[in-house]
Amino acid sequence: MSDLVTGDAVVLGLRPARLPSRALAIVLDLVVYVAGYVILSIGLAFAIASLDAAAQAAVTVASFLLLLVGVPIAVETLSHGRSLGKLACGLRVVRDDGGPIRFRHALVRGAMGVVELLMTFGAVACIASLVSARGRRLGDVFAGTLVIRERVPGARVMPVPAPPPWLAGRFAGLDLSAVPDGLWLAIRQYLTRMNQLDPRVGAAMAARLADDVVARTGAPAPVGVPAAAFLMAVVHERQSRDAARAFRPAASAPAGAGYAAAPAAGFGPVPGAGYAPAAGPVPVPVPHVAPAPAAPVDAPRAGGFAPPA
Image (tube, rainbow, N blue to C red; front, side, top):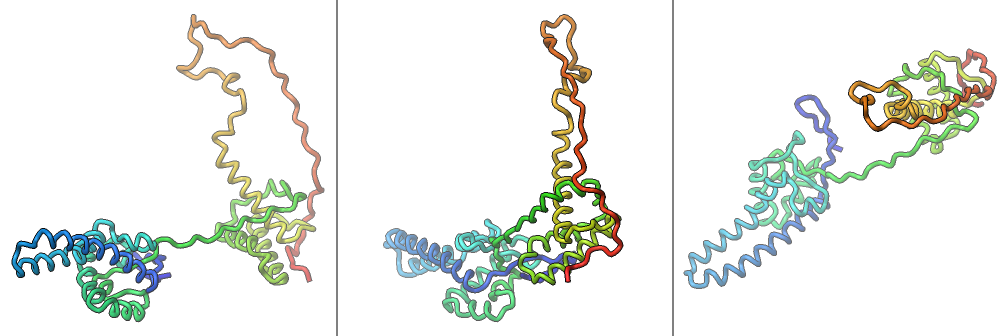
């Protein structure tokens, strides 16, 4: 990844394209342009057959410059650095600061491309790309541009393991507002990779993260709960709260509340109207029975979490 830093001290995470992908894109572009040039030359051969040799040579040179130099410059300018070959390979030409290129950048690249691509059959461009740390050819150096990869394979996101069933809802009253986002990220990274770690190293990391959570929440460490299981239960509780907060506007009003509440202004019954809700049986409220506690309240423990010996 490129360590390019803009004038605003912003690090750009750009992935410069290397020689194989750039060579493939150039070959695809040249195939298209050369095919167009051959078709145009055949058409011009019949059109300028009656002209003298000097006129035919002038038309041939003009068509060569138009298709193999002017068309690539126009395509890169109009497509903001994505020609047909680069689009097929997932590449794009950008400025050194990460912005889209303009006509002057495409003009310098096209002019230098005649020398290092067409006249030397790509030898100069290959050498310059291999020497450059970011794979730039001479046209990129003089134009102040960079060819980057647009299609980058995304990383697979592993789900956080579910906590044990006997810990479900046990930390519903825990205050998690003081736990910073960096600690949540560290806990998530540990839980998604704990099976790949050494058992002792993983246990030590779990104990340290669990102690950090206990210190942030101000609650005593639960007795008899392993550190990894505690972290799973806490993350599951935070996810449940985030989901409830996200869907609260749609689920906050109980079913049938719109019929029992007083009508709002502008939507009440109109005197003399023919519609009225039919009277029905009044539902009897069912008393709420509190569930029995799943386990006795844990006693405070001063030692915190400790990895097993």
